[in-house]
Image (cartoon, rainbow, N blue to C red; front, side, top):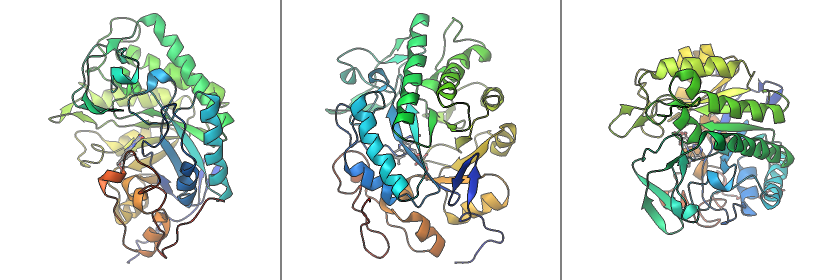
Length: 371
Ligand SMILES: Cc1cc2nc3c(=O)[nH]c(=O)nc-3n(C[C@H](O)[C@H](O)[C@H](O)COP(=O)(O)O)c2cc1C
């Protein structure tokens, strides 16, 4: 495969004080193989360790509390059993000289009453999302959520603080706050999903208040921003390509200015519409990158050539790959050598056991086991 001059994709990188083997990041991938109690299975340790040749692994989105759940069989990070299971994962990844952060998740309105003993999901405002929720009894239509009372919000910030501490106890190298894909934090940020009239809604400063309270709590637990990243998706649109807020660049400029003040480790930016297109839809990604003080992880539909070109152009520090990591545990080697990539049938993406999860062979046909 022709090399792009000055390629740095496979070169080491210092992410703050965290030395990475290369500039390849495994993007977070929900795989829905945890128990109903949100405990990841033993074979999750094998799965992540097999992918530890990535410079950095971001875990699948992990619920900060029972209230945060929006999909069946997703893991949590609030109970001792969950922390113990994640410790097995971080030990296995570290044994392969890997680095891993945990993605902290609250789904907000993207949920379903059947995941909450019949209670309504919570959101900034009572606005029903389109689409369906993945529940224990299959896909079910989303419902109109319940708008959070102002005095309920501190308890959710406290849940983030507790989850951030549990992630530390579980041995992660850091955490990534999930503020993308229209889950709870982004629901507060965007003016189409936040119609509140209290101090958490209305003016942009108010819409950013809750996400920034969460960032403050999480960075406090981690002793500053150096081990805390955040995921954003400024280009996400509602079905029909309707922007989710009236001024996405203005919103994200202000958000990034405020985030920079925390000295965060990185922003993990989904460029375009997740998995669908890289159309910029009016978002100036290089400008957002320049606006932010920490490192920039670029994501969405990257292949090797675009990854190398983006690094060569100075438009990212790291590139994350999601879907390609599902069936290619040795993705780093395959990208380096130009070997063909395996494709995972969608039936294996969500739910099931170790099949289609931790049994994908490396190029030479072996299935590498965790130490
Ligand atoms: C099966 C699957 C699960 C995903 N789970 C998450 C998740 O837990 N958290 C998240 O932020 N993004 C999630 N994503 C989005 C990916 O991280 C990534 O942004 C997207 O797949 C685009 O990158 P790619 O083109 O390299 O796959 C998921 C995507 C897929 C295909």
